[in-house]
Length: 360
Image (cartoon, rainbow, N blue to C red):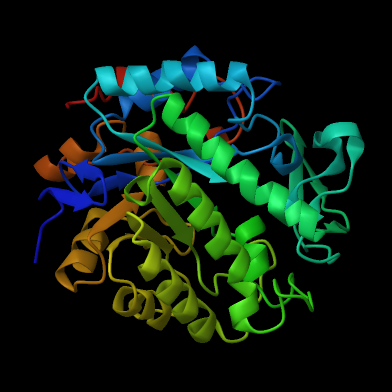
């Protein structure tokens, strides 16, 4: 079995090792969703990752997530991300943009003209939205997407993927996990549609398959990844028969030959194993299932058991910019500070590099 420090090829992506930086919501973009110098510094500090996957980046104004979330649908946003990718590449790193749409877990306070969020069905999520720094409010009843809305959203994902490559990203990852829009179409309790995008499992995977196909056509399947969190329950998602749903999805994705699946492990270990068996390409796993960060021993065990080809770390990467070297050398890891995750400036974001400089 390969070790964490063996190289990996996933589609068109070549990783020097298998310690991947997971997407983490950090809310440091400006009010227009433009990444600034602080974000460029943050990602460049972590360029020693085998692959950096950015925080979720909204594909359209209608897909707006929490305050401080960056986008990839305006010229200023694209220019901001270009500064980030240039900084990462100058430091020797590789970076893909995670493209997201919040769907029903968005909020009118953050959407154009205060419209209701879009969703597969008009079912309110038992969740909350961050509408201002430190402010969480309940989600509202969304508006069921029409066929025209669905087609436009597929185009939005493809356009954002094209913008990402134009901004210098090495590829894109689609956020199909954690109760975001793609996951909402897969979920039984958020997708009550009776048309071809709902009903049985084959209908519920259709939207995800179409988004993947459109993005792969726009930027290349080898530069396209997909994140999934089967039966995780995040943001009030319920999946009654996830084995059938995700098995069908894996079969559909095999025909498209995208670069990788990024699987967030949930309470049922058989589901990641099922995807590993049904999906023919590379698998990145994220073992985080609670408050404890993914640790190096757990990561190595996933590779030893052939459950994944690479492992993504979130919280430890937030607190240890030079995480791969610390794992390689057995150096102690700094514990993350959750109070700095979602708000603020440099504290707990870029100031850690002064204490633990990246050793690329």
